[in-house]
Image (cartoon, rainbow, N blue to C red; front, side, top):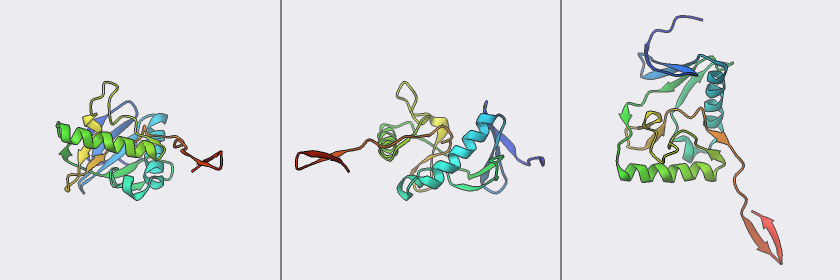
Length: 152
């Protein structure tokens, strides 16, 4: 693989993230789970609807075997305020209602996971690491028809 020209801005057990000169970042897997994280981010980005996609870091390009993933870089930090935390909880509910469990945006202690969250230029919450999101089937709601229950 070619040498990557960019500054390392994050290093984890699964991936290393490089800042590129063009306003993007590149995520390179360092383990098989890193490849899975890249693949999952691509899958979530492609499959979720427009309303949810605008809250995900924009994927610019990725390798055929997920050996790299290039994403737009977002610089504005997620604020430590009740207003934005309430917005984050609403966003988490939206993902869950669509059958996507947004793991890693809120900690087990109920706090925002600031390292995975940013704001775009319009102040919209952007999730920059969604490699641990899990697709689950949305809960069925039932409508009663003539004494029978029918899924909607």
